[in-house]
Image (cartoon, rainbow, N blue to C red; front, side):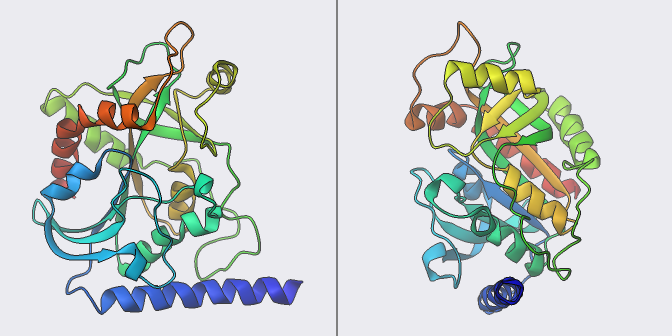
Length: 280
């Protein structure tokens, strides 16, 4: 059993190298910042001066996104004059991928040379002070999914035990607040709870998640952030409150309504992220 685990880990290293080698053969410049575009946030890609776009299906060992609203390609180019790479569509545990597969692209981006990771998502607000359309800068998370680091550790990727006291980089968070205030962008801060999905939460689950200390709940982000920190990659994450899980405000919600809610605040997010990228 031990030998099988070691073989699987070595195989993962080999897959990462194979994927990185393939991508590097297609690009001319190393990206400085990696951006994961969540549900409805693909409009930011339109601000990137594209140099290369690689469909996920063409990338060795890459998963393929199956969610509506996730375009499914790796986009390289410049944003406000800075070299970036954007995942246009992410991968989720509920799609049938393991958390290790979900986070494989984060490891690849790190090996490609990124120095910062920006993550975005849509989420349900469980804080009674939140409203639909609020932008929440994530300050911490609660992981309610399988941890992507379970299993034998590979020291080449990161330490066995990962400190998560600052999962979300305080300097990046401070920068985001300053830029938001400069543009009069209203924002909230809070804790994000990551759950498996794909069902939206029941009223009792919303109450439970709020009792745990979360301000919002969603089906992504947390595994990506854990792996980013495993590889010592600073993270900034932002969530758009697309629906409310607050007693008296809970209504039936669809994925299309989530995307529509996010689309209304996308211009503000584009302004925020463009300015953050420029300052970094």
